Length: 184
Image (cartoon, rainbow, N blue to C red; front, top):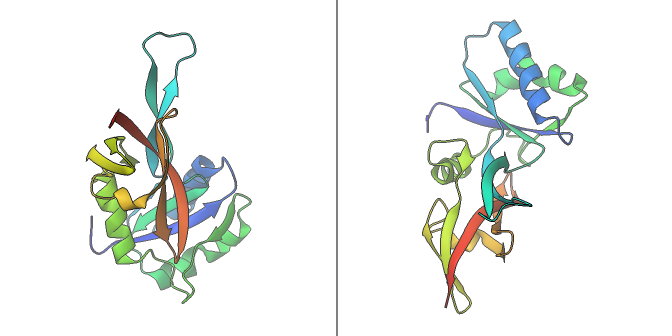
C-alpha cells in the first residue's frame, strides 16, 4: 500500500467496467497530468464446475464488486474533481462517482487498508479454506483467515461465502471463494 495515494470509486452500468477503464485511462493520458493513475476492478477467484469432467471444477477470476471501478492515484480530491467531473457526468457508462455523506470522495484510509490486507498486494481475492465445527466457521488458509466475522452466508455446494464489506458508509455484499474441507 502506498500512503500518498487515494482510491476513488466509480459506479458503472452493468458489464461496462472494462470500457470505463479504457475510456478513463485515455482521458487521463490525453490531459498529460503530472500524476500517476491505475484503474482496476477487484477480482475474486470463483469455483466453476465442468459439466462433463470427472475431475470436478476449476477456479476462475470474476469481479468482486460488479459495476465498480477503482482508481488509485496520487491526485488530490480537489484536482480529481476539477479534472474529471465533466468527463464522469458526460459518460454513458458511468452512473456516478461514489462519495461519503461529508462530500469526501476518497476511500477512508482504514477501509483502503482493510482491502489491501485482504488482497495481499494483488488486485484479486484468492480463495480461502476453512472447516465448520458445529455452528462455527474457522478459516484455516487464505485472505479471510481472521475475518470470519465478515461472512454472512456460506454456500458449500458452490464453494462460496458472502461477505459484507463496509464501503462509503454503507455495507456491500460480495461473493468470494471459500472451500469447506471438513465439517465436524
